[in-house]
Length: 221
Image (tube, rainbow, N blue to C red; front, side, top):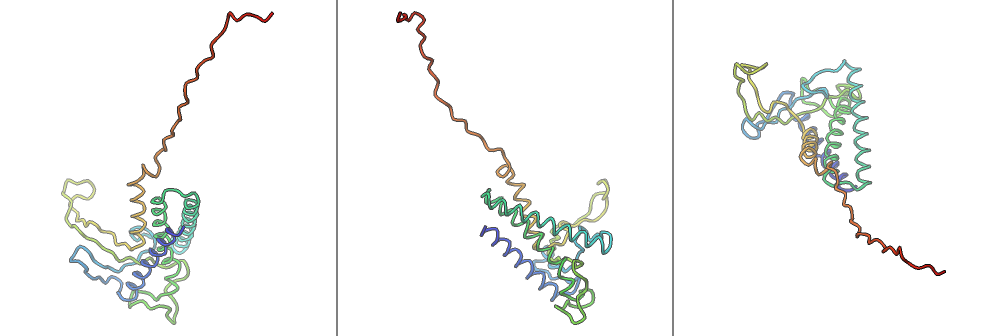
């Protein structure tokens, strides 16, 4: 159990240190070019769903956060059972990465709204006197990694997006997202190792020699 716990600790520590630094040192929308135009630190926040979509207002946010907490609890229990059964070590590493990443984003949603001021107009402050920008479970997830490696536009004949511009890779993500993606990718890559049917070795028994028959054996009487 030590290895998955170490992985979870390191992922959470790295994820939260990066997020707290970005949130307290970057204005919302500010960016820093680490390597030209293809690796950029870009501070943005999302409400916990893809593409910044909302989910039924405040009630929807609570429902989504609660669902994610329950899901992470289930993943944690599954990870515990894997370690108890001493399953494939690499598979345990994959589940630990997914668990740590999901938990890292839940920390943002659950506590950042209470612990930090709003990033909309100024640098966020830790434990502001006026209180945080949101209540428990209503915080926003901090994202910062942006890799617009390739830009271009779809040809006019391309279905749906013909003539429109595109950027690859457009989504801005965080370290926790990367941890989840790596865990999932490794499961897909090594699925035969993890889920392939184990061959059953049948031990061949030596042939049985039939006892000789004695049809003409004389009677004792």
